[in-house]
Image (tube, rainbow, N blue to C red):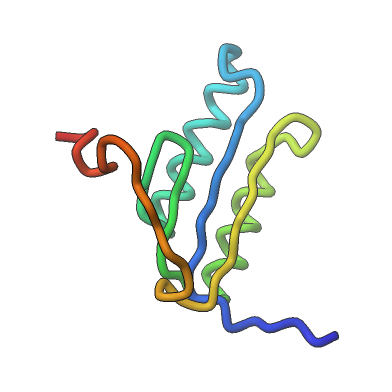
Length: 99
């Protein structure tokens, strides 16, 4: 089956283990900065936004270089465009949290 590389929108979520250790804190900060370079910060460890396939590959490579693959978890949900999903928000909207 041929893969469809026309991905233009992603949700990225991460959970970096051992956040209390210095190594864990450094990985969290690095992952956050890398994600912020490519996507829009949505919630504590959730990013989302439009991205080209080539930039998505760069993002994934940078993250792989930083995380400890034995301990950390990152998932990327790929969509063809931002119109391909419906969103319901319960509670405070994300923009209200940073005022």
